[in-house]
Image (cartoon, rainbow, N blue to C red; front, side, top):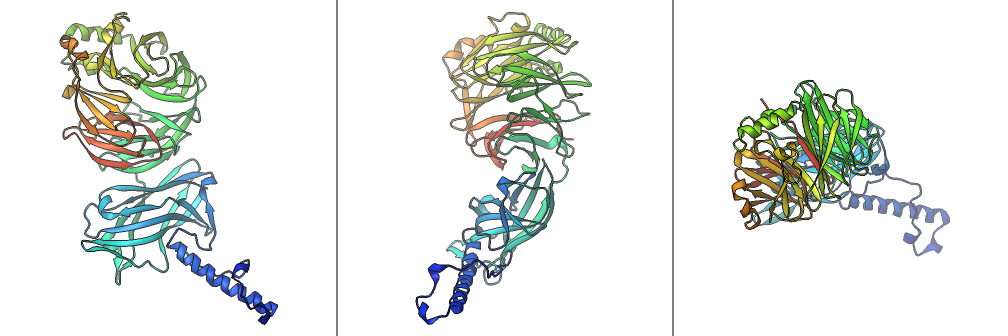
Length: 556
């Protein structure tokens, strides 16, 4: 804590002046005012530093109005602890090289060590000017040690609570700091609260272990190590990032983020978690969804739905040039591309004739599927492999407000989640290839409304739907074509898994063991074990998270 410095200028308070004015000279009255005001100021700041977060009399500034970079602070408590402490944190400040303190957290936060053991807590994130920062200051209102017979107050250190850091904030970059707090070493003699912290910055990670989550209201991306279940980096991108996708190439891995507010695509290099380039969207407005298609061993295209202009931008991933666009339906919000044709090789659901139909089609074409929320249809871009341009745009009507979709090649289906209607639309890929638009769409009823995501799991012969209101995953067992009559009479839902508030998107890991859910309403990611069907962990991310992506290959 910065020491309270006595000030002798501009501290007179006429309301605290003495009543016996006639007994004092003008000079003594002035000195009396100063002495009383000085004592009052010192007492007041001493109270507020450990009470409601006053910044003492040193120089403080509000970081919210400053431009430059970002800083994020995470707190972690070891999984095994013997001391149960509750800390009422009023604010967190950071000190620049010139001694100025900037406020980076001002919302009161109560942290109980036994409740957050083994978990990360996001203390705060803020925009900061460029420069180096040397200290972190914690404003604590009170600290308690919890025991069976009740809670005992701990004394707060008179010099305050500070920890040394050494970080550089750079323009258009996020700097993340990770504080490991040891509660067992944080209580000194005489019940003195003396927190023990280990501070570190972000370190390089193996890209195959990383998950990328866009945080729309934070203008950044959270990077999660799925092996440890912790945030390991934060990446500052454009304004209002929404959709996110990854390259399919192992030789040149990249992460692509659609920035709805700045009409651009941020390209992230996962080897250093930095934005490599910003691609402006010239042929559309409000980019939303994003997908990547690998059309040759050394060739990938990026497809971006432009919600505000009803178009899809097509970008060459090798040159970062937006070279074409396609007109689609009203309010394109989600997009997926055909996966590798090799994924049908082990199908248990397609006939040999159907598999050959897909293989023959893929020699010359591949499809990109677009969910148009407002026109209640799906646009299918028939992409010519030779020219790299759409040869045809097919429109299929579905039901109320399609908002998410996924391709299930082993079953030859595209599943479409409809937000405003209690059914799941099924598009038959074989029928689409054959040109039978009228017979290409069917539905599974009684799945519930407010759906925001769908995942296919051929290994478990199961579908997962994400339900925004009620905050849960629905598990479905797909009906076979032979039992299609049952689809309208029986509920296909075979179970539910509770997650966080207002889940917006989700995905399954390449090993098929866990499902990661982006909870927009609770600023977190739920980790769900697919076998036990339970939420096993909650990971804090930025404000109003939206999209999620990870690399498809398994870690070695």
